[in-house]
Image (cartoon, helix red, strand yellow):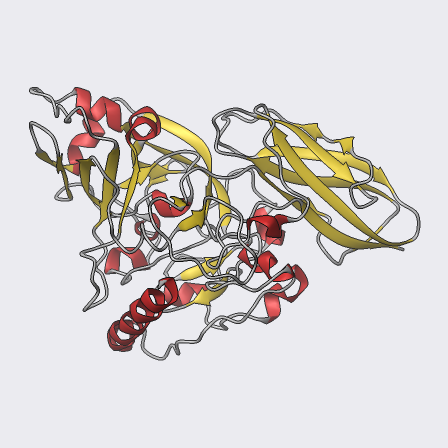
Amino acid sequence: MEDVLRDTFERVERATLERREVLRLMGLAAAASAGLPTVMQFARAQDATLASAVIRGKSDVLVVHNNRVGVMETPLTELRKHAITPKDILYMRNNQILEPEGRSTDAVPLAGWSITIGGLVAYPRTIDAAMLETLPQTEAEMVLQCSGNGRSFYARAVKTSGTQWAHGGMGNVVFSGVKLSDLLATFDPGIDPHPEVKFVKAEGADGPPEGASHPDFEHSLPMGDVLERAILATHMNGEPLPGAHGGPVRLVVPGYYGTMNVKWLSRLSFDTVQTNNVNQIPRYRTPNDPIQPGTPIDYTFENSTPDWRQQVKSVIFEPLDGDTVNGSLTLRGVAWNDGTVPVTMVQVSTDDGATWTSAGIEKPNSNFAWHHFSSQLSLPAGEHRIWVRAIDELGRSQPLQGTVRWNPSGYEWSGADVITVTVS
């Protein structure tokens, strides 16, 4: 069922986008991305279109996976240079028609942008986004990560569908704006959601493919987390929110996967059930119970969970897979989780998990941000595998075999990171 829906969705999307791209991206050829079975093959297997030709202001160091809707990955060689990921190298992931405001990293004016707040509430409202500038501001340093980040590594068991991301479908950014709870508190009379409301549905203003069964891109999120964490973000990294990253207003829920941080926010709805939009089901879900790699699944609300909170994860920044290094080296990287509690330990193994040592961790500004780690290693000449896994305060850790969480769409890869290096 999932494959049929996805194939139908992509065929309709492709026909619509190709017609529009002739006008908007003259001279650019649509090309399907190739597989990413290993990190070392990452740079050789992608769409050759320059990122700046797809989205103005993006750096051409980005690897373009899909030039029709704008899907781009950041090489780790670039990602590791910055504590806060600049907008020009921050990854891109879009699902819908790429509207004009999404084709540039320039800001989009707040004035005139409307956001409707409704659903099962006593007093629905429509606001002009410009009012957000008059309210108290808050910020959150956080990991923004595609739920498909690391998807290519599931191919260690069975290759999954979708963009074959390596590790670069993420960044560490600072979003700022108005907490949703603070905005709601300004209304008199208040919104007053129905007591049975459990979810907040967020809808983006980007247009759906013609003929699609769903009205627009939308997701449902648990109301508790939304009211506690959600920000109507109008800035990123201290600048007005780039159009390409959802400006002028993006719903940001720290600790949640990027797809749930809905761009070009146009509507919030308080509901008792999750939306049945195709992006909520069957897309962007993982099975509740492990399944055999290669096994299809007919997703239901009962047998699966949306890609909400991020899994515990770590990525080695230095050295990189395939590097030749000296015997005495410094291992560096980042770890993170959903921000509910801090990451308290990063362990390193050079004997395939037989023994582990603890790396040093820098305390981040926010539990939602990258936790930088480092470890001094001394290795003899020859080839070595280096493993890293993160553990948080709740004891949640990364499995050594990440394929135990295999799912047909390749979401939420969280296996322990492993690289192979050669000591000269």
